[in-house]
Length: 89
Image 1 (cartoon, rainbow, N blue to C red):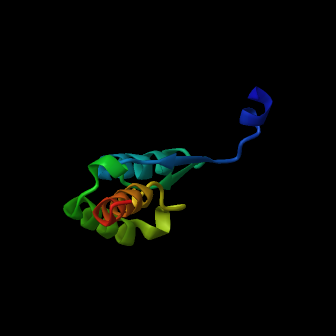
Image 2 (cartoon, one colour):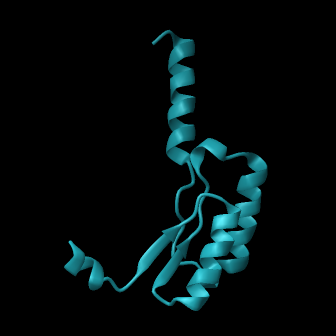
């Protein structure tokens, strides 16, 4: 396992909030091995945080490798369970 880690060419740094996203951009500027992937942890996702993250991604898109956690699975499953509960299932 350590041999594989030593051969790594990049580290995807996934953030859980806007502070993490900013920090990962700063780290990537200093350490070229780090690839930022901003995201929002599903349990803290709200409309304001989502809008802030979207604006950040748009403004920093040239320095972002990918988009990380966005909580879509949590919100989808939560909504599906609510619908099933209302249907009596």
